[in-house]
Image (tube, rainbow, N blue to C red; front, side, top):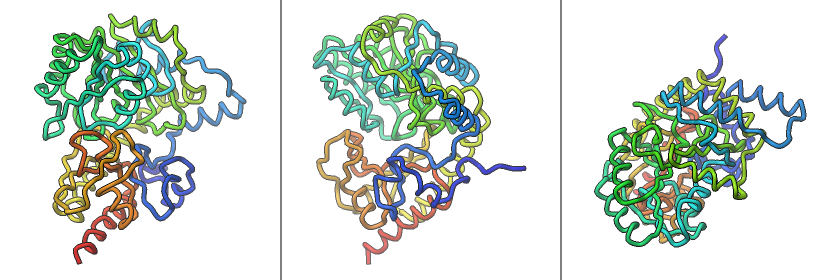
Length: 400
């Protein structure tokens, strides 16, 4: 007996009964392709683990040792990396809380935090809320790391900070860029030269569509860096959060400092769900990646058919598409604050009003984001087709 594919198991009606932010932020006539949540049912091992826990009344305080062990085994199987060790690992509530905690330990108020823009908006909000200052290092035109841009930003950060840090998104959100080993080695050499410590957000690591993921901490030169990883993005578990901060071999000071601070830990159900995913849902993940490749290919065709003039360069990782719509003649983005994902202007506001499709406003992703949209293609074939049909129809009506 065959079972439904991960991205084909739910109807629009099924999804509209969900109560998560993706399906409740906008009215029901809007197709939500914005926030990074997939339109999938849970993998069976995860569902079974959660149901069993609830039936046992197992809702107490978490012990996360087995979650760290599960992440270590997953990293060994998939990436050949054995760097997730208990003495250098610290369970945290979610990836961004781990990132924020690392920033507070590795820098001082007023110090610079270098980011590659355009980038995930909370990189701005979490950094600024911690009293640090974002220093932007734009990506190259093809969405890859620009080591020249990065070196200039490192030099500025070093001149303006006592303890600057570099916050890396690996793989990159929103472009879907999978950083190569040689690029990451170049990053680490620059960081060492300018005295910046590195924090890597690697939440999208399991979602590689083509190529191979390189964990930052697997490289020479990353001894004083830290990475934060989670199963939440790959297995659609944002509502059952958990993450692990992993320190390089010479970065135990970060874990030691966090152990003496009030840093929120993961939820018990998050630990149960994510350990079950990492230990028992490899085949489901393989099927999901096949589905995502197919959806990405479909999106390439649909953008060409429905949005002539828009530019889309498919990434090698994530289920996020970064669309350049500057040539479509749409109203420009306003000066909306970067880092505010729910704030829409320009093309995103236009398509929400006229096509009833919710996309993420590129302006929220920092320099280089204006005139772009982020689209989540981890949905059903029919929803993706209908969304692009609506976008194209709204443009045709505007031209009439």
